[in-house]
Image (cartoon, rainbow, N blue to C red):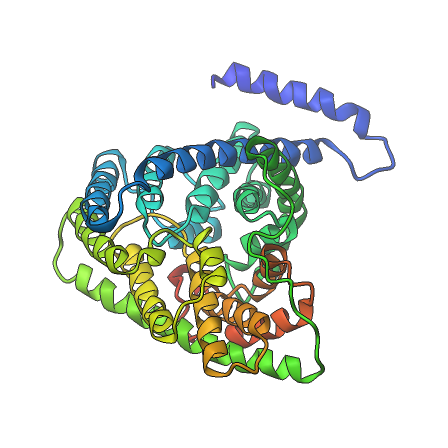
Length: 422
């Protein structure tokens, strides 16, 4: 946009602000800016989801041994997109830019992120669409802020609000999405970015409204775990106990990821070779354990409704952790929050089969909360997200489990850019 056009736009926005300057309400031009960003975020998320569903339906028909060449080809194509169009980075780069790059997320990486992540997620990679959406909508916030000549914390807040709008559209929890966009930045000092909480909340509400209208999404839980009756104060102790087990497997995932990262980085090879190798390995795992294919949005319900023997559940747990680790380290694009929830649900089912007298729902929700809080360092938003996604009406046991996972997390965070400022 030319300089003259920008000046005109700012002039018009100032005129628009005039009627609100002397009113007794908080409502102002900034509210409209956050709402517009939320509308953009909802539209972007809706279009992305429609594209993802279409591509997934085209590729889901390939089953059995066919998943191996399909995932290998999609991995190769995703790697070529990244190689020729540009590397969009991963979640640690988003966090790093928000914290140390004045809140700027570069929109020029969006085409590469959209194309590569669609190929990776739709073909069956063990990463979800949350991280790509956060990158795309967050950079939209940066673009809008630059357009209006915002600087400093105002620009950072708009970028964070954009991130929250994309995250909320997928998860359907405006408050949880808003808190997540703050907690993921720096797990010890989320208050540093608290100025962005209201912009993030407003953008999230509008984003989810538009997203729900576009894809006709209901307001109910995605995974129905509402069948739980509080049986006494000991339930909190059980929640902590299950969370300790969940945190152990959070550590297992982190070490597994570091192991595969050391292998993939042993020799410098082109990104498209790494994604090709990753696709072959993921295809082999999906061939033997089809439920480990995809990121878990629908597969968690399949897991909960099916009657899997204990040995098969243990194999699914192990190979799902391996699949997520390979997906993360081989250059495939996506987010690991929903896949970690899948791991937590599998772990809860295993615990229940070993000890049938315990409450199944409490075990599943506690393990889901603990493993995600252990890896991402986001106990508050994890609690709200799980309460929304599962319909688990008892908030406090989830909070106990999330905090347990958070306090038992490794000292060095999995997302390296969450570390203290130098």
